Image (cartoon, rainbow, N blue to C red):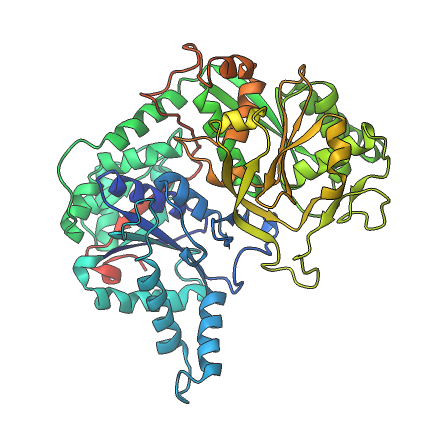
Length: 571
């Protein structure tokens, strides 16, 4: 097993996650099996109780793990499936050590940060690094570890010490560290590549060879970062430094990445999506949603424009309190090609989301509702079609006489963390006459990731279906409503899903619900379905038979490859 540790300096958010993902990508392109671990030094057990404004979105894994959004980058770049133990936090480590202490495992010894906490960190990494993450079930050969935060933070000290010991435990030929830093000086702020003289200066003061100073300058897409690393000899360095079994041969995977990146820079047609949510002031709150939209937009050769709309600004009260914001929000909504209402929690802004859903339904605008977005679509239909004017979710109005959305039996309202319906669950399609089923490839069932406490009231199912809102997807027992579709031949796309399909969207395989939204918003869904779920030659400009997506890069890091572990890096 080879271990590559990625750390960061100067500021947090420097781009460690993209570097870690890119390193893993170029190694996987060489035929190696690669896994990834993210270490977060905070004391929380997991990310499940975070506000999206605190750390961005909460990413959900197959096993229900609520983790840092960087694990989403690992999964999308490397096309792997991780588990909750691939996200290690200070809280998890201390919890495991204290549990052992209470059980008497330390035989009365004084339990200390060194050696007990540091040993627990190393044991966790060694154990998790060997868990298969590819579909073939093969044990990984390389583990890329990202240490969150900034070196020098007091929270990171136990982890820094653990890896100082770790490099000697696994031996020099099996361990390498990458340090990502920022060069803020005007002469080398790295909007453009560094001169050799600057590299030599960094090399001298950081005690590494000049060829181990890799410049990652501004690029148009983060999918260009692996190509940037490859062009600067990173694979050759790892082959030499870690004695990796890599053959010298063309790497088809990176060739496709280059084709994808080139295409993303040449898009001419545009498609706009109104994202109506509660956390729109911080785009990372919807990181996976945005990436799923980008994957789908590039697949149909369109440039994506996301119009962020704070749902509270759409509510009638905003017209009196902040009329400018109210009119701007409605202008964005009305001018968008499609409308997306993503997941969320809490009552604020829900009435604005219902307003947006009603507008999409009546004006025949392509619409996708995810999790809460689907639940509110049911509420809107109940109010304005069934005539149940007080229809609501018991999350927002416990005393409503028409509880169309109710809390699930397993929900524990007294505890927040880990009490939701989480992780990969199966959804059965109940009819062949379903747009979403066809987008999934006409399969009988799909498995997608969930994260919710409330569900559509199954006792009211028939009332909705009698009026044209069909629950075309349900859980295995037929008790939980998973997919809704509006039966209206003149509506291009009105779909809601209880699960979060964005978590499994990949650059080479866009999420079908999001893909359907983009197809409908571009006005080509009908022809796509008529062609047997194939794009017309005008839109099908994909490399080979693959479907690709894109992200954008907004960081300008430098990183250093340590020749002899921590001693030669800038820690």
